Image 1: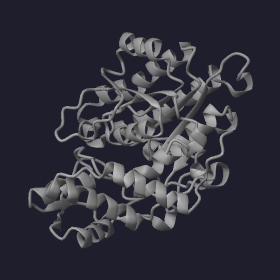
Image 2 (image 1 turned 60 degrees about the vertical axis):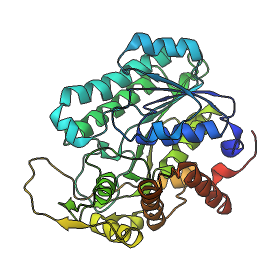
Image 3 (image 1 turned 30 degrees about the vertical axis):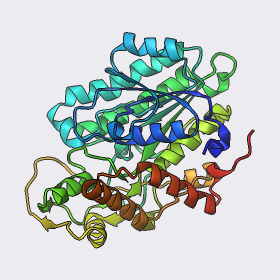
Length: 369
């Protein structure tokens, strides 16, 4: 596994913010398996079970607020990270309505504090900033959104992530300008927008799959409000492979990759909430759901799709698992956890890599540059 991504991560000091979250825990495991020295910085996990806690990853784990600049700067001074994967965020739309101040404080000001510390750090060579597919001004269009499309954000979470995109662009122009790279600075900054992710170990509230699995374990029915909503579902390992590929390019000093990127399945692989539920039910028969008609005061997007053709063409990234297989892997992870107390994360990671090798995906090639 150390030979993946041209062995770029082996021995590197890597900071992952938000490492106790869903994506962050999967990413931290993958990086340690590739021989990286991983430092995680995140709020302490309050929810039980927690995927990161279950994995027992051999890494440095530090709990703290992304806005605690003194503590964060001390991490940079102590561990001298080569690259930062910034995933720390208030990531729930519903919670953003309840506490918009905390959402903006974490997502916008937290990112600002991180970028400032990176700017002053002599060790940092690359930053991969993770935002969301919800940064676009959503017009419920059948065509996917391109990286240059208008930013927006109806709810506080989406708007906060759009602000982060503007902030990232500003820093790339003002402080990490590509024309002055290697002359006035040595940092390359990319921002990544991914579609809806699924996978084992997500227990966040108000997420379809996690709510579904908790309901199934409790032998209750999950209530579905918008069965025809379309999302670009993909397994969590899909965007993580993209983030790692972008990180590789930045560490290789390829400045043309220091920009915004969409990562999602091909449009024809998008499916509705109902189709996802029906597929999941074939894998775990205990799963039960019912459609309900409720007049929620919260806005919910019915259609959201990304156009990831830029990543497919310029980065040569592509999906590895189909939507159907991604659903199957996710449901089987939870089924194994709830029925047998097994943690299938490493097994799924190894399976994902083996399938990628068979397809000769670009990040599985072992040439060291």
